[in-house]
Length: 232
Image 1: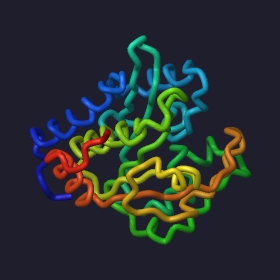
Image 2: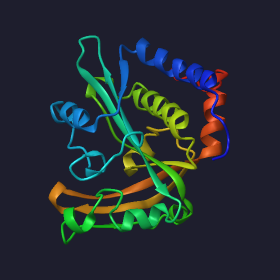
Image 3: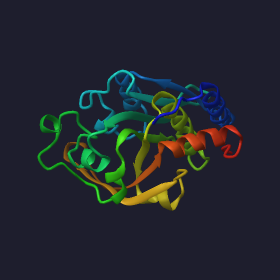
């Protein structure tokens, strides 16, 4: 994308979501060391195993190309987590990156099981190219669910990704249940975005693809700054 991010505008946007989290008793921090992130998520009760996408033994996330968010409650116990990373798909597209398993493994030939596969039937995935941010590994503790926390942490992630990378696209994947319950603020979505099997991880699922263009992210960040979409 070819525009300069206004840091003051973004800071105001992030403050809106941070204040919303504080009202719910959650305090966020952002980190960049994925070894630390795996240590946190691995010791968090009821949190499922983080995908290889964000595990440094399988995915080489260079400095400046990934971050994570952890929110803790008033007892300093983990209440919500989320991670994001940047892919350079200037000579590829999201569909290809999924189907070669490079979204999950830096070296699929070395790390993937012979029966691993990812099928992407979402037509728009072939048009998602350039600087692409993947948001994932979202988990909200049971006592905070149904309160808009997923939308709050997603809002924080949207602002951080925009400020750090000015991406061409942001995207993520989630199950049909999230569509039915309107868990996320979805602008674009298509089914069969990731029909994934990772044998060693015990993963066999069919998820929707959600995405926004970089211009749509920019518009939303600046719109939120004016108070139009403040989370409850």
